[in-house]
Image (cartoon, rainbow, N blue to C red):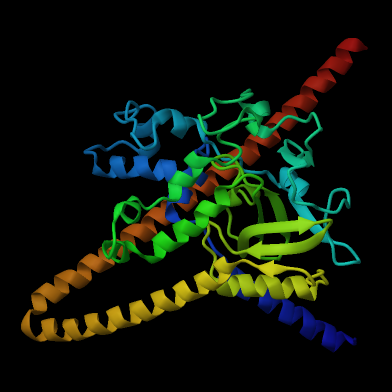
Length: 389
């Protein structure tokens, strides 16, 4: 390849990456709260309290209201305060992230980048402070190391073999997050009225709360990270500290050979197109795809996207006709409705911007604190050396 071809190839690669970054997925708004919370409490729990805060007549910042202000005694029946405080999601640092990084060997098998061991997503492995290790390994889990919790109370329908915590293994309580009670309680023909895109996705996400559920995330450079889902403790947001991703979902591997993929992620909800692009990249880098199967959830997501797109088109067309009529008969009402829609859009965008800015500020503060700590350690070390002399 001559220099001109190399230059063209590099340019194409840059353009491809820019396109991926443009289409990268950020977390849903409820999970931005999780990211900027210094405790990283589980996003869907925080969002429930955030709705109460929005309705409260207060000038207090949400997190101040929640922990120190007027809302510190609030405890919601379906998400009690104890659960809110216990369910804290682990967000990996750059160094910790390397423990979950995956590479493809010369036979197309998936291996841990840190040691070259081929991956098998079986119950013989567990998560720990040093990434995925055999269950016999004594390395403590993140919760054991940081909180000192050995085992939380197990619910009646969980056996004592469920190890560390009801939070860390997936349980009936975890699955209940995704239950649509209106759909569940409706009878006969009334059930049809309760079916929606969210109801169908939640039904799929319930399956991801089973024990030994392994998850993956691919960043915008297609670096692949794999771990074990621990509901309310280790999620898709854990790998990249809540940053943008290109693809995310569930994965199954045997002796390094990819066996099953699913595009399900409650935190990111990546589109089917990203999933297809991700699979294409796996093939391009030589991954053994000879025995992989794609979850039915992919077909469901494709169908839902088509349905939602068609529904929006019909709704948009109907609204356009109504707006034309209102423009002739009630111009002031139309003007007020358009202004309200713009205000709602600006409000949502502003909230995202505030949360993102706060997250960036927190990350910079952590970085500065880390640097300061290292410098102080060096100074203390030198002082100790002088004293010994």
